[in-house]
Length: 311
Image 1 (cartoon, rainbow, N blue to C red):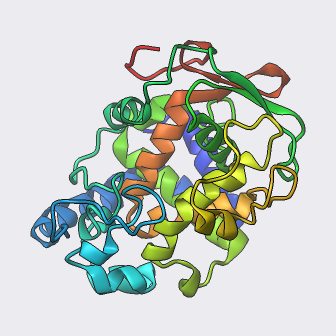
Image 2 (cartoon, one colour):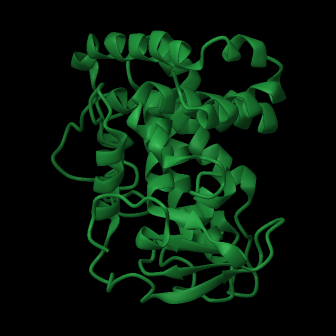
């Protein structure tokens, strides 16, 4: 059976929605029976995976390789609610269907290895500016709703986004999610499903808000809005005026900070694309960082668990 802490984490979420007794009967059986079945069904539909019709990214995207829907085999579905699209293709993984619509949206197959995928995500996102642990600028998030003086070392430019994103969702080590649980992929996916349900119960996103092309365009916008949560800027907005307009960025003193809702919406689209994908996002965010004393976000060896990567 799942560890007692894993069960407690599931139940704490379940109680909020009034179905604790059902899950309490057997968390691991629920995870195995439902989610492994989903993996089998997805395997049978891999021939339906989407692909680009050309061998390049769309140069008209608002950020490099951020939205390739114009050149995609399932182009029309990019502009419809994700929920409707996936309902028409039961058993098909959303990352399979929309494979390649962004440089980072690639189908990884039906059989997850969340630890390995998280480690790979760290390495893929690590750019040449990375010089080592805590060598980046110390950033203080002062303008994020409900947060007082949360800090992190921005060893890579994406740390500001990913650290605050993980903190907002409660996915950092030290916020209740044990990285040891990702060894059981079925349990990890069940935990992800419960988080997805919690997000929708909180924000009640409409279908019209959850369109893949909009979601892809909004990703670099969130990055700019995340910069507005701190006075310790790494860069002054975007070089693309359209992104700055969408982000409400007029200057370093006149901009719109990202919100919990913005982060929740970004993650929730991954839920709609399949719990295998939202679970992979959760694994990446959980494995790379932790919440330390004095409200600082730590990374790698500063945390109880670290992925199998050099730091």
